[in-house]
Length: 152
Image 1 (cartoon, helix red, strand yellow):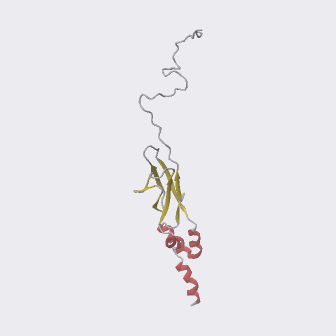
Image 2: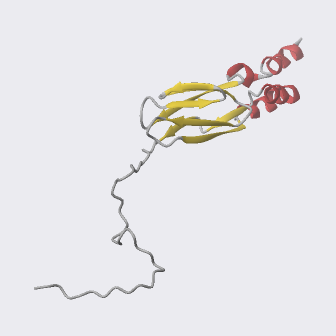
Image 3: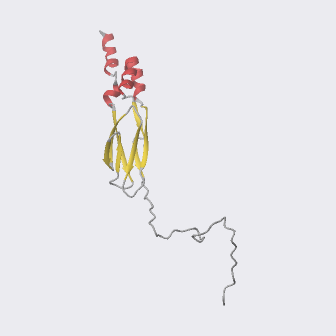
C-alpha cells in the first residue's frame, strides 16, 4: 500500500505542463501606435492585444497600419522549463506526454513590441534634394563649364 501512495504523485504529475500551461500560449502584441493590425495564423487583432498560438511551432506575427511600414516578428518555439520536472517526476511517461501535446514548448519572445516607422512618400512634382548638384547632373558628362567671376 505504501508503494502505491508513493507512486501516486508520479501519475498525477504526468503531463504536468499539459495541465498547467496547455497546448496554446497567449502572446501579447504591442505597437508604438495603438490601433495597428497584428495577424498570425489567420488570427487578427488590433494592438494592443493578445493572440493565442500553438506552442509547438514557430509563427510569424505581421503588424501593419496604413501609412506605416509593416513589421514581421518571428516567434520561435523552444522547450519550456516544465519538461525538466516532468522527466524527473513523471519519468518516461511525463517526458513523453507534454512534447506530444505541445505543452512542453514555449514561444519566444513572449511579448511582441514593435515600433512602426512611417512611410516616406514622394509626390510627383515635389522638389527632391540632389545633394547640392544640379538635377541634370551627369558625372560621365565631359562638357566643361567655365565659371566667370561674379559681376561687381
